[in-house]
Length: 83
Image (cartoon, rainbow, N blue to C red; front, side, top):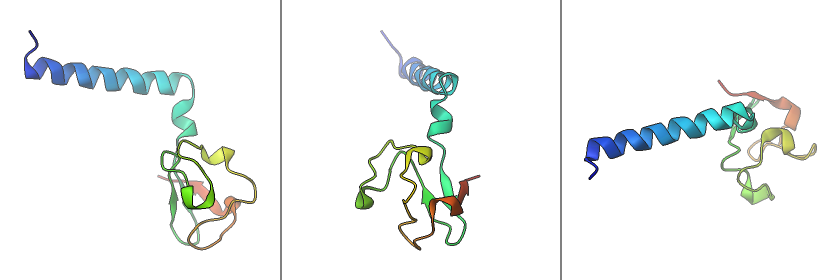
């Protein structure tokens, strides 16, 4: 029988293992957020940009070269990795 504290610890361990696996295969870097220099919009790969045809899970590096900031229309090269 699991005690609630044991269950919580198992969930924490599972999350840590997922993060380690993601990091080991380079997935964590693919899911890095990017910030638009002119307006501060944050592109979050987990969310994507569905209003502009970009599916959730799309890494910034995989965005089309002609993709623009959905707020200010800045070019992709105006973005830098978010802190």
